[in-house]
Length: 152
Image (cartoon, rainbow, N blue to C red; front, side):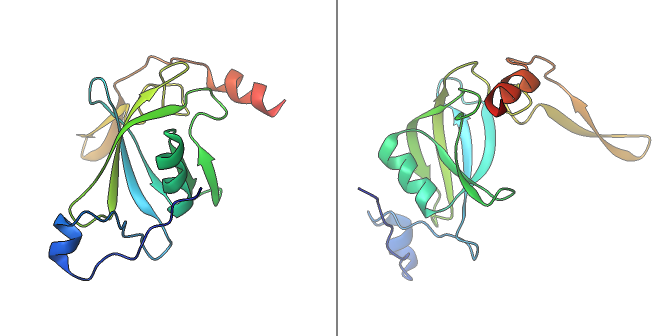
């Protein structure tokens, strides 16, 4: 079974308070997905979903996304083993963003760099220039080893 999503209502009240889930995909057919850890609320990543990825996520309970750089469907953790089991899905008021609360399998890492979160750097100003500072040096896995094994 593959879920399909009806077109969003033009009635704002229906869109915001009605029972129909009618995601508002953008002109490229994508919706933004914000992903947090279901246990502690940490922000893990932001990605995009097309209708197929969203349907697979709802149907299987495992997070799927759409890779804009590869132009393809992507099952999170398929290469690394760090799959995301979806505990809850929410949508925002106008249904153009999705919030996934997940538990991460494998190494408990979400970022391809081996870190738990893709948000491992802070932004600040140094000598009048915007700079980033790494705040999470801990890597849960070695990306070169994990991704090389999958290629070989």
